[in-house]
View 1 (cartoon, rainbow, N blue to C red):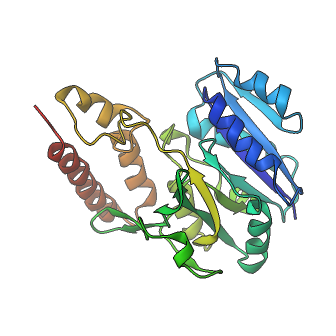
View 2: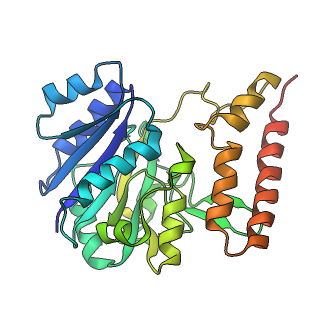
Length: 287
């Protein structure tokens, strides 16, 4: 069983280098890394070619965004991999420990027909959990990060939890999943990673986060629309319209549509979801 690591990148050369260095140092070498550089202008591709000759480098023109780039990498793997191989989706703002690949290989044997996500911790406080998995209340559209703020070291070896969905921040997927349910839906453009795991769960696959696999995450800057603690009127367009915003109406609409178990459930979910993100914005609005 071989693992293919697929990483979309764009103009984050220093972060990309750090991520690739952590993969280069893995104790388990039976994996291949595919990087999709979507039109970087900061020398990312040149750095990869110079410093990481074993990495497969694919290119985009700057219009792929996350979904288009990750799909390009997945399709590349599906053209060459064996049915029992796995695809590991990773973002370049993450660093992984030396046993990351070897731990995933063990988990793949322990949990067949399962999509396995990583627990996310703060790169500057590596024992502090940022997200230990996502649970969604499908009636009220409330998302909850499990065990946020707790210490990773307080959980026993082998601890795992079932979740509602998984993001692209270190998720091991059997390659057959993509052949069965398809790749990521292109109408999301950027923040579409939570939808495909829900689709896989509907097809009978299990979704878990294992606390034996951890990624250390760089946090977005305080001025990023998803990290702001205060908003002004001028932030409305970016908050609701920018595809990089977690509150983007386009993304929220398609997630409600694509994950709904019925038309009425999808409508109710979307209404509650819009109410939640609106309340979030108004609470932090400073005139």
